[in-house]
Length: 210
Image 1 (spheres, one colour):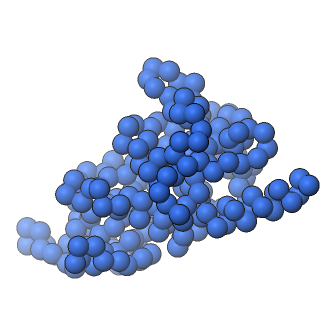
Image 2: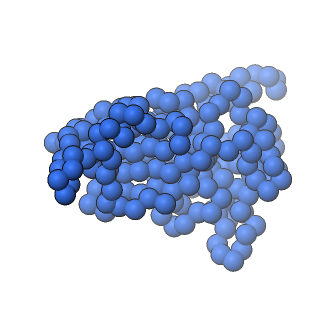
């Protein structure tokens, strides 16, 4: 579980993480970092500050991740839905309250997908904040394609052998999200991958069906 505010020591950053991307925001230099072993990812300030006498990097956004070989109650193998993909499930994201509404969560997703070749999958339990983030990414990102996957069927929406890119509103909400105590959509997850790669694979699949 991620708790903000939090920091990383320069030694931890150097030992456990690789730098994925560097960008500026509000006059500050920020680094996107990724630890493929844990796995976990974060956006940190490049400059080192002193916290209670100890040098640290301030974390402005962090992502808890879990690498899983299967998805869903019926043990739907990842290989049935993707080929040669690095599949990681998102278990939680947290942005420093002072840094919200700056697009940092979307930037973190994009960096992992575009620069690390990762396909991100949503958690099975979605809260309102996570739902809004996935909708925002689907609606606004021109780098990421989002799909809706029913892990119990092992099929993407519209469940006819094809795949439709979710734009934040083109699929009925009641077919994606479960509202407690209703659990009928608990096996449904959202999948975010490189839009260019997704389009190429979809074009190839379309040609194969002709």
